[in-house]
Length: 124
Length: 108
Image 1 (cartoon, rainbow over the protein chains, first blue to last red):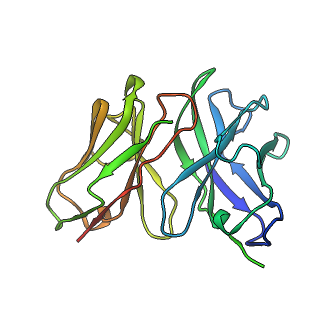
Image 2 (cartoon, rainbow over the protein chains, first blue to last red; image 1 turned 60 degrees about the vertical axis):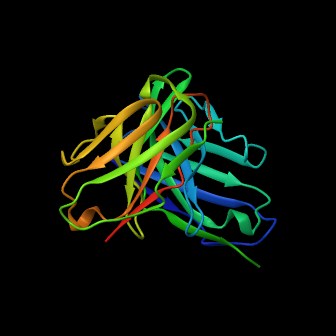
């Protein structure tokens, strides 16, 4: 059974860097059929895709966050990571990691497995 | 960027009734690449439907999806108590960003 689990600090100060880890079990992030993505949800609001990474290291980012986001991976640990720099209160959200179906070399699809999410609050 | 608009924002129904949720795209979604998710309080979204009409693994057949182009529908027949939740659509037919609708809350 595929399982994902987010981990990282629950509180980050403004202007600092948010760093999260997603640990995957029951599937390999080296699979050619999937990307691995991050999605966030501000309290009481909707879902926003942040970015996704392939086993090759290829990444897609949401242009609205691209200048501040880096997604990386460690296939030996079956983990992938999110870094978001220069955070503000607007970055306060539940952050989810999820498996992102790959449709072709340039097309990604739906998210079929999700972690439970982790709340990150940006506050001094 | 494709913007998805869901309607209504809130749907008030009773168990046993049928729910019809709409998702409209600002431009045509290629190949009907649209998914639906269910989210309950404090939980992650769960994939219900992908490719507009294919049920995900383990999803009951009272959930069905339809539509193409810019107009898509999620239908829930014979609402069960556990179906009261927020539902999101997501498109993936275009280049990134892959976007979500704002959600429809189905409540009693």
